[in-house]
View 1 (cartoon, rainbow, N blue to C red):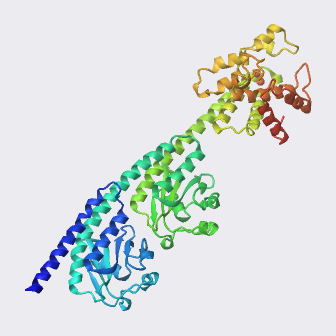
View 2 (view 1 turned 120 degrees about the horizontal axis):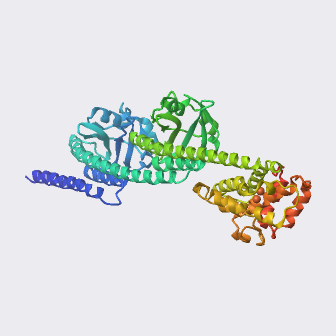
Length: 542
Ligand SMILES: [Fe+2]
Ligand SMILES: [Fe+2]
C-alpha cells in the first residue's frame, strides 16, 4: 500500500515538473527573450526530471540536414556548444532519421557511438538515452541525457519519461524557434530598410560599394562580404572592394566568367547557397590560397537591372559556427535589389554629369573661337584649378563644382563686343568697364540651370581679389567662394604666361614669382601654396 502511494506521489511530482516545463513558454514572449538561454533552461529542467548529470539538445538544420548542439550541459560539455555534426552520424543522427528513441548502457562500445565527438569532451559517457523531438510528424532535433546521478543504468521507465517530456520540449522549442524567427525577420526588415536608405543616400559608386559590403556583414551576420562587378570588355568578374580582416588581400582579384561559385551565379543569373564549400565542385579555392582565407560557406546572389546581371553579391562564413539558410539567401536577394538600384542611379548620374560637362565645354569652345588668341585658355584654367585642388583637401563634390565653374568661368564674354574682345592694343577705361561685366553676364546667362549650383557663385567671383580690390562686387578674403579663389590663381597664371598680339607671355618663373608675391593681396595664400606645390610636382603643364 505504502509502495503504491509512493509511486503515485512520484508520478504526481513528475507531472508537476512537466507543467513547470510547459510554463517556460511564457518566457518566450518577454522582450529580452533569448533562444539560447531559453533552451538552456529547458535542458536544466529535463536533467532535473530525469535525474541525470549531462545532456544535450541538438536541432536539425533544414538547409543541409546537419545537426547543431544548441545546448550541451554537464561536466566537460562546453566544447560541444554550437558544434555542427552531419545529420547521418552517431546516435543523434540515427534518432533523428528514424524518429525512434535510443537507449544504451555502454555508449563507448556502442556501434552507433560517434567517437569523434566523444574525443572533443573530457568526460566518460557510460549510459545514454536519446529521444527525437517531433513536430507534425517530422523530426526537428534530438534530446539526449547521459549518466544517471545515482550511477545506475537507465531503465525502460526512464526512456518512457524522456519520450513523454520530449513531445512537450518539441512543442516549446518549435514555438520558441518560430517566435525567435519572426522576431529576427522583423529585425532583418528594419535593418534592410535602414541599410537601403544608406545605400541610396549617395550617388558615389565607391561609397555604394563600400556600404553594400558593410550591409552584407551586418544583415547576414557573416564574417565578410564581397561584391564583384562584371567587366564587359573582358567578360571577367572583378572586386572593387572587400571588407573584413582579409579584405585588402582580395581587393584586386579577378575571376573568369563561370569560375567558382561567384562566376557560376554571374553566368546563370541565379542565386546560390553553399553550406559547405568542401563539398561543392564549383568552389574555386584559388582566391583562398592567395589570401589564406578559409571560406567555409557562402550565399551568392546576382545583382540585376531589368533581368541583366551586372554583378554578384556574396556573404561569406556565417558567424557563430552557423550555416546559411534559404532565409539568408532571400534576404541577400532583397539587399542585392537595393544595391542594383543604387549602383544604377550612380551610373546614370555620372553619365548625366559627363554629358553636362561635355556640353559646357562645347559651348565654351565655341565662345573661345571668337578670340583666337585665347585658344585653349579654358581648358588650361580647368587643368590648373584641378591640379591645385589636389593639395587643398576638398571633397569629391566640391572638386566637381570647381571643374564646372572653371570650364564656364568666362562664359559671360559672349556679351562683350567683338571689337573690344579682339582689340590688339590697350583697352580704354570704358572698354575695360565693359569687360568687367563678364562675370555678372556669365552668372546671369547660367542662373536658370539649377544643376550648376555652387559653380555659379564660384564662376562669378573669379576676378575678385583677396584684399577686396577686385570686381564685380569687391568682396574680400573668405567671403569670396573658395572655388573662385582657386580659379583666380589659375586664370591669372594662364593670362600672364600666354602670348597676346600686343605682348609676349611672361617667363614661367617670373609669373610664378608674381603669383607668390600677390599671396594675401590678390590671392588667398593657402591657394597660392597649393598651386605652387602642384607646380613643383610638375602638375601645372602649360
Ligand atoms: Fe575672366
Ligand atoms: Fe579667364
